[in-house]
Image (cartoon, rainbow, N blue to C red; front, side):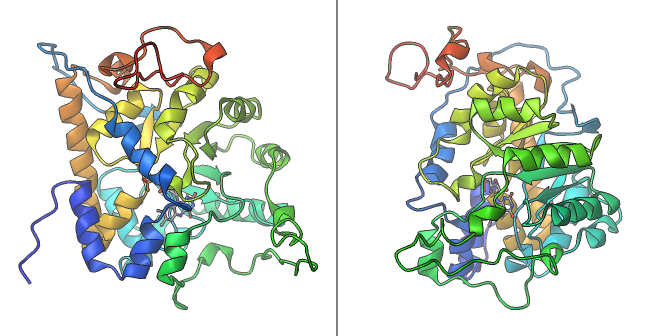
Length: 389
Ligand SMILES: Cc1cc2nc3c(=O)[nH]c(=O)nc-3n(C[C@H](O)[C@H](O)[C@H](O)COP(=O)(O)O)c2cc1C
């Protein structure tokens, strides 16, 4: 077999990861929900946007630093929570954490990780950790897990709210993917599982199973907020401006515009499409992050232009891990950061704060206001008039 050429970008890592991984693990990692329309659209939304180059602007003192959640970050790239990294590399989340620490990249550890947060926090130098939670069946268990993560050094809690049930992941099902017995969600062991009831004859396998009795509601978020005053609490999986407003009213510290990488409900909009509406609802009062489809530095620039303060990468981190563990993931993050810096230079943006809608060639230049909440602020090429409506 000819030697593989060194990966130069996120898509090179994806290609090489696919060649290395067992097809069932690839299907688990890569698949979107149902027909994969949202997963695809997360990419095409970025691809549809053209950038506006600005020349001859002074770039002295340019940097990618930002303030987020009270910390100074050197760049706006975070690692999104994803389950069971040992499926793609034997060092699992330890490799991820090392790469995060080496590149000063905040890592949001999944509640479904195969490595305990205590073990990662003990790595020297420890990465900036966030911990992702799902609401558990019993509120006390959710609180106990949150408290454990905070004691172990997590600086923020990220409650994922868009996946009370698994999406219909046909590609994963067709592949026959099954979690190998040696990989566990270590944080969830010993906590009360959802005890699904057998649906009565003619009953609904979901609605009559009791599974949704444990699904979180706004009341659970309000309760958690009350239990942990002062702890940075973020919600991940918000697309709707009204949900964003409700989260803001409950006192959350930040929002992650996410559709779970298109893995939950198929035909949801791309996250980039949902972002401007959420940004209008939030009006800068709390930070907004975005994930879904980030594969290039230009994607980061576009997300920041439309209202995000920073972005997270999900699958690309797993692709890089699969190719070469911690060094590859660290390399990928440096590549994305480098691409962002090139994009900032060629659009004349010295700082992240200077990246606004004016870097977008096909931006809607009218003020749509909240009355037209569906307006993305992006004019679809070929369609005249302001916005896409
Ligand atoms: C294999 C895989 C596992 C995931 N596991 C989790 C998880 O445990 N918790 C969570 O909140 N999101 C999870 N996600 C969603 C990611 O956090 C993120 O929203 C998504 O991957 C972003 O899209 P991208 O993969 O296009 O970057 C997972 C995504 C993938 C691909």
